[in-house]
Amino acid sequence: MRTTFPVSKQCVILLALLANGFAEAKDAPNRLRHGNKERKDTRVPYVNELTSKVSSEPDTDAAHFWAHHFLQQMSTSMSVSVPTVPPTEPPMTSPTNPLMEPPTNPPTETGPTNPPTAPPTNPPTNPPTNPPTAPPTLDPTNPPTNPPSNPPTAPPTNPPTDPPTELPTAPPTNPPTNLPTAPPTNPPTAPPTNPPTEPLPRCPCGQTDASREADAFAVLSTVSDPALLLDETTPQGRSFEWIIDIDEFCGCPADPKFVQRYIMGVFYYSTEGDSWNNGCQAPVDLTDPVAIAAANNDCTIEADGLDIFGLETFRGTDAWLTPSYECFWGGVACRNSTLCMDRIEFESDGLAGTMPLELQNLTDLRFIILEEGATGGTIPSEYGTFPRLHILDLNFNSFTGSVPVELYNTPFLLQLDLNSNFFTGTIATEIGSVQFLQFVQFEDNQFSGTVPSEVGSLASLQVFEVFGNQMSGTMPQEVCDQRDINGNGGLLFRLTADCDAGETFFVECDVPACCTDCP
Image (tube, rainbow, N blue to C red; front, side, top):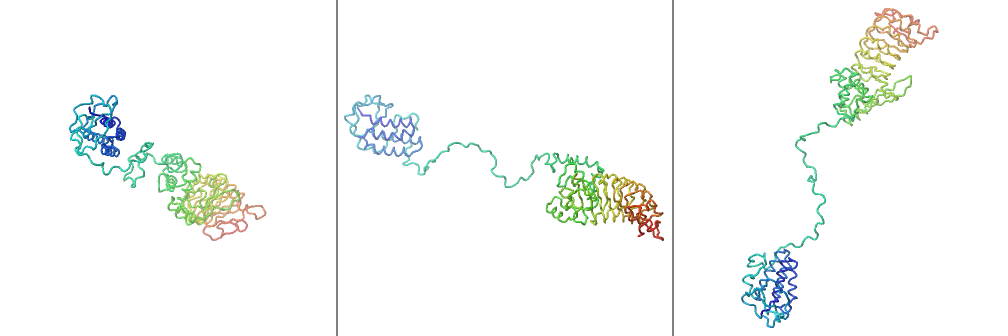
């Protein structure tokens, strides 16, 4: 009877490799070492080499291979057969005569007929000198059919030096968004195929630019001829374009002062504001803060003339059409209580052009003073509707035509100063209805006809001058009676006419009985 106990130890390695993988294979040599100490010397080379191969091999399949390979060598060298199953019971006693030399041919028996009675007393003195020429007859169910004839003598020369010291604790919480991490270095070569259908409005009026323009046109058509608004060559058209497309103040059509700002724009363009010589003309670029600041610095005139009523007003010295409130433009002032235009006052400032009729809509306007300029044309008859006008002073300009009769309808007119122009026509009798009129200067014009007697009904009249015209006749006695000559308490202290004998145009007026002098 042959002792088969060592074979069962080898089977442990093979079964461990197949059942438990790499971890059991690495431990199998240890069980082999310690299971039969008497044959330790014989198996040391195989055990050590198997231990080295299995221990150094991280891949389980490779470890299986090496274990299988060395089991073949050990089985052949020890001339034993590998049973298909391990013994059902351990041997009772060890064999009395252990094999001294490995058999030359593997046994034909599939397993021991009787279990060994005792383990061998002496292990083989030497391991086999030659490896087996063929694998065992009984192999694992799924190993390779033929192992390599010349297995590698050593593991790969460049295995991974170390496995990762730490494994990821968890996958990323947020998958990639597929967005670029930075904007492209080059902008798109073409605009978007679908641009916004409506750009942001230019002014914060709660409406689109088109809607704002439409509302503005509707509102301003009540103060200007709509045809003029649409004609960009007219003062009205230029002011409309400015307030809609250029003005950085961005007035809204619903603003009660929107019309006022538009009218002041019309006044600027009507009097050729770009040619003013007072430094208050608008900058070339009305959107350039530097240009605006420079223009504001150049403007120094103030509308600070005398007001016998002493109403509180505010004013400034900003250039015209700049983004500040129109009441702060140089040469104008507004009432504190209403924020409405109260005064327009220029003298020797290079104004030209004509007076726009739109001024009639500035119903709080009390002073229109445009002296010593080049403004011409006629006085709009619409000026007769000013409900609070106190002073109309247009002397030393180039006005023509007659004085509108409607002008004498202004109930609070105190001063009508039209001297040194080119007015024609006669002095209308309606002048006598302006009950508070104190100061009338019509000299150095081209008036004709006679002085109407209705002038004598002006109880507050203090100055009345008509010399330098083409008038004739006699100064009415009713006018002369306004003089304080005989202690009658009259207020008229200056009365002049072309009263020198021999004048081409002569008005008979005795000095000092009636006229104060004949210039």
